[in-house]
Length: 188
Image 1 (cartoon, rainbow, N blue to C red):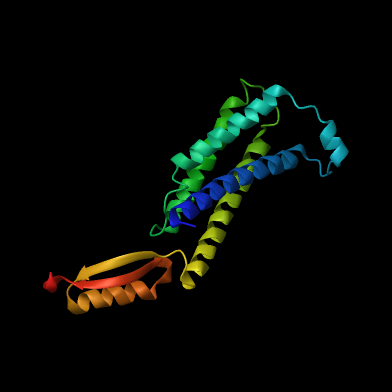
Image 2: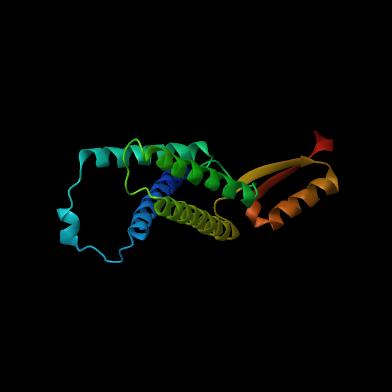
């Protein structure tokens, strides 16, 4: 399997996981906001009438969420970025999505979108997205410790400076670089 194909599969899986987390947060916030702690049986779930408008809304909402996640930078490389950047991206995306529900609740008569629902949705969505990012980062770190998911680099420098840089890069697995070669700039 080529590295590019693997990257595409991982990226699509991350997008699907993010949408699943958003959907789970939505359903959990509905349960919290309704105040009922009962679980519906499978027969009761099948008996629920699904309106076409609700189905169209949920699909459109999922597409808006996917576009928001992508535009906030969820799927670009964070190999060398600080964790505060990821928290800011998640916060921005979740706030936009929650704000969209807040704005649309009056014109579209979303009775479910109470203030309690919106707060629970924001907290659950933020927590689940941040949690998946932390778990994913730790899994990548463990893979990199075992020599997987590394980028090969060539260092061009002079003598001991280039060797020191190569040693530093090799000692920090979170950078995820493998030094393939050191080229002495004096020889060029």
